[in-house]
Image 1: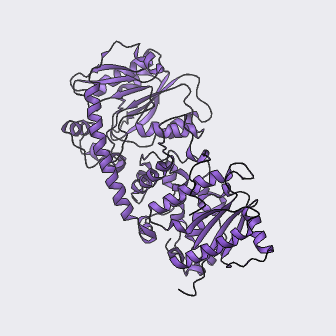
Image 2: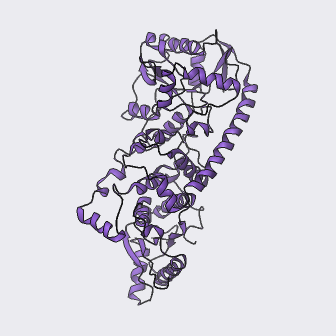
Length: 375
Length: 140
């Protein structure tokens, strides 16, 4: 059940082709609002915004390669207390959709009245780099397509994106695809659900016939990504091996907990590591200092990171928001992704893949892990 | 390292392992006094953060004691503990930290001997691998 339509790109202006479609979505009342990335008036950043008026969409910029926040958090904010009565379309990248699916499982978001429009994503710049490029007069989106055409990857894209195995969104109602497509001439829209199909039925685009070439491209593309990812895993494990190396990895941590605050799957209303369990009186600190001779202050930075891993590794989607938020540039993504990969492998669990699949730590099988308790 | 006495933090489930420890005591079984038992209502209530706290403060070992699979007082707490500890041990292993300092044992209320043997066995193992490096790391 999928439908593919070819969307012509005139004069190489992909943005215009997309924005025309988005404006029509609102005009035809197919959705009552759109959550869509838009260029700020300062023209140096692109942020999500909730748009209800079609003429506000002129500066929509869905392929802008930047991820200021993982929008799963935004959807959660908008739907946690119940979805609105009218339908909202949300334009999301793969990592955002996967995180959203995890949040729905955690009962922190709802897909009711939500039309998920997934976009292909070959990678994003960090907000700082995006801004810097804009200020140099370089338009990051042009860079993205230029590099893609050359079959190269910009060294400046985020590490999370360099090793991302999900350039193509899953679990979306509609997909805007351009990877493995001659995007200077056309891109394509794909309907993955009946909801998406009903929308495409209202448009008179032609059938898209480049699927096979796209699939071959994606296959090769993924192979490279997975190779890079595995190299990163190996390097990371070497880098952090043992207590001493782990301490040095997290040495710049100031316990600000930003990584937790931006993490799309860290959903707790009150984080355990910010609870009263971590408030101690003076004697307790003196005791610790006496026992070890001295203690690092602020305390419990390593405990926070290790504990956070234990709490969210099963659901980590590898978006790298944690690393973006770190004021001291600790390259968190590689450690969290390596750990998450190994943890998810035990349960053959892929976060964000299947809504019906229960979260690993909320379920169990009687006849599994039988060596636990013996060795 | 002859005079090294390991320190073990034990999270023992109220219904099985804790009662097993009681039985070992009332039966006057001998075992090393290396464990600091903490009674918890269920092994399923032991969050990984508690285990990590113990390890980072320099505990040489952590023992999680629960009812045998299928015998949980709350039906499935120990199955959940089994998954949770597996996650934690995978994290420790990935980061090259000693995951062998974390033990899980299913010990019922009638298995006083098994409890005493477990403590002896774990103490001997920890003596062999030596004190936890976290004991001395002030910057942890």
